Amino acid sequence: MLTFAPTIRNLASQVKLFSLSFVCSLCNLKMRNGPVKRGSAFTLVELLVTIAIIAILAGLLLGVIARGKARGREMVCLNNTRQLGIAFGLYHQDYADTFPASGSKNAYGPQPEDWIYWQHGRDINKSSIVPFVSQFNAKLFTCPGDSEALRLQPLGIVPGDPFRYSYSLTSYSLTGEINRGMATLITKERKVYPFKAADIKQPSQKIMLVEEDRNTIDDPRWVPMGLKTNLITARHSGKGFVAFADDHIEKVTPAFGLAPQNNDPTF
Image (cartoon, rainbow, N blue to C red; front, side, top):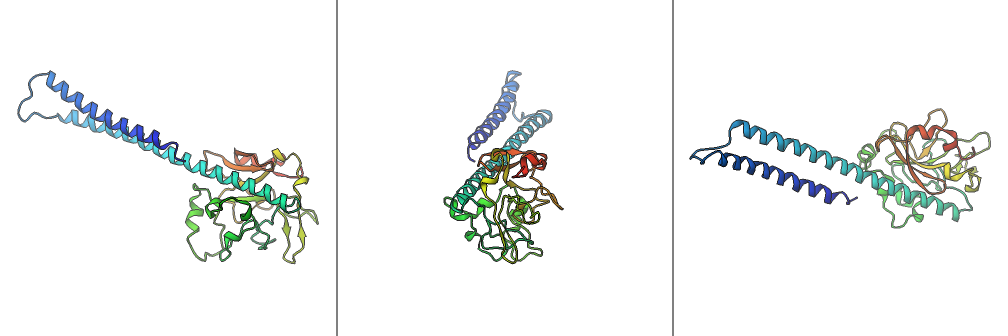
């Protein structure tokens, strides 16, 4: 995250040096044009030109700083997605090849097996995925570019109990008695519909965890096909991060997540 800082500092130094050099050049030009008289100063035109050039360079510097900060947030989000992807892999290795519960807001939750304890009043540090994350910090569940999640997190009770984090697990709804994955589904009556990692077809192509669009994320379930299609975010230059079932990470467009060959574990 800090790799861009030296570049910004160097550019700031160059702006200062250029501005000083320009002013000195004007002074030298005036001196070459003849002896400096008492009371001699820059003309209004020279002063305005100097100010304009400094303003242009300052604008360029601010643009570089903004891009550097955005790049830093993107790298944190990439790392979050990678750590969570690894954690899910470790989880199903320890739990008979099954995934944790979806963390559903309505139909299938809340459950003790939820991968994230996101509802107000639940201790997020006790989420079922936490034991599989090295040196866990709750910030792992939030992209630093997700301003709405960051706004909601310090609030207390909020009407509707909105989802205050950034990532969601692929979770199709039941088709009859069939769970198409990837999350385990548990009904209100505690009937369990597990999904095994071994049932994923072409895991290197199947999305497991997504950085979901703020307009569709209402719980930690990513439902790519259904009454309300959930979308991948476009906050990182038109793309969002996803972890695939084989634990590799990519930055993809929202359209990528709509294709069954990418979003359907059993396709």
